[in-house]
Amino acid sequence: MNQSPVSLSVLDIFKIGVGPSSSHTMGPMNAARQFALDLAHRGVLDAVRKIAIQLYGSLALTGRGHCTDRAVLLGLEGMEPATLDPESMDPAVERIRGTQELRVLGMHAVPFDEALDLLFHRDQVLPLHANGMRFTAFNAAGEVLLREEFYSTGGGFIVRAADFGTANDDPTATVLPHPFWNGASLLGRCRETGLELNELVMENEGAFRPATVTRDSLLQIWAVMQGCITRGFSAQGLLPGVLKVRRRAPKLHRMLNEAPSPGPMEAMDWVNAWALAVNEENAAGGRVVTAPTNGAAGIVPAVLMYYRRFEQGSSEQGVVRFLLAAGAIGMLYKRNASISGAEMGCQGEVGVACSMAAAGLVAALNGTNEQLENAAEIGMEHNLGLTCDPIAGLVQIPCIERNAMGAVKAINAARLAMRGDGTHKVSLDMVIATMRQTGEDMKTSYKETSQGGLAVNVPEC
Image 1: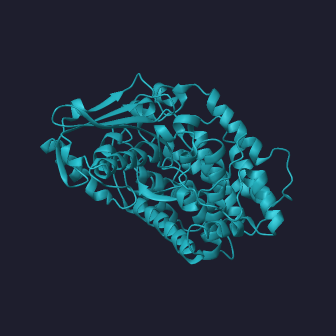
Image 2 (image 1 turned 30 degrees about the horizontal axis):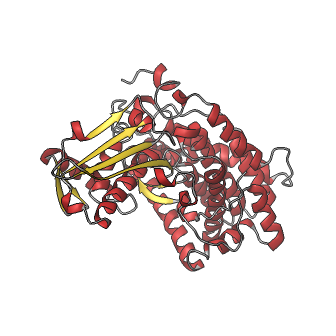
Image 3 (image 1 turned 90 degrees about the vertical axis):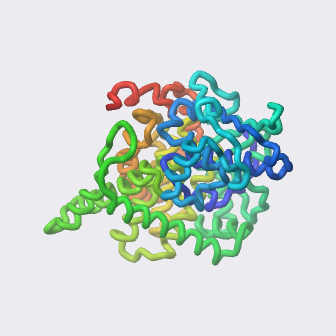
């Protein structure tokens, strides 16, 4: 096995963006924007008279439901998920379609016929990943000025075809004080240094930025998560798309607030409500935090809200410990398997988020490093084989409820681990390897293609 160390940052794992999908919305938007920037950097932008976009594999099969078409148009115009105002998306797309013109990077107008220039190749897959896309720019004579292929590898990450599987596939080249490549080496580094896992990760983050900036950035991530829950509780009506799914979080929130007295399952009810609120906002294209993906964005916020509301002694510093530890676990999955539903099925999204949240809760509650690793392992072990079969290609059914289930499961995994001494038969590394093997063995129809499972057994409308 390649023993190159993990050199990601927790701020690579937790990214502010927009819904409904990190791999099918944020990734394509990032790729389209990068292609536009490459045109400018090469000095050929002014010569462009046509841009053609081709989507392959899972992007083609579920792209319309995941707003991939809208994402690439906005990306070519220079917009990026982290700073894009969700309210500006519809007007911008309507303008592009109404005028049949793209403003590349907001500065160069190019004619655009969507029916001819944006193609969904539902029966073709590019060779390196299920989420492939190709961008081509032509001059007035029809000559190719630039052609590039990108892959969206989950969580908003993108990789150029030329860089896939190389050192450049890693978005950072930062030398860390405590490098690690798997769970065993991470725990080993902690033992060697005497550091708690969250402390070790914070020291690694110091290679990217000062500790105060990391702490403030993580608390900003937490603030965005809370804002997403608030919007999810206040929004009303139906979610977009043919399924006409009604938002449930607002009513559940109202019922919990108006209950005459808390019941024995109050904590679980609130966790369900928080998770539903986030993923209903995601399904509506609102602002969310990838954790580690948009399809699984509700699990970490719901478990963090549980920590802040129901655990005595909870604190802001506990939130920081939670996100540092959860981010480290996310890095292990990104490095040793995948966080892409198109590669791993939903075990790579909800399963990973559950594992991350379980580990984060143990860190917030001052558990040991060994208990933290045990919680992460439990969180994934009982999500192995989870398929990704979104009905109508929308991140709604079963995705929204699945986040509520994953959040409750994460809390239980943390509680099980905290009541042990950290010793267990199945290691986190073993379960990550099993998850990767399971994803590789899983039929393509169960990996974000809407060609299997619920997607074919439940009528769309």
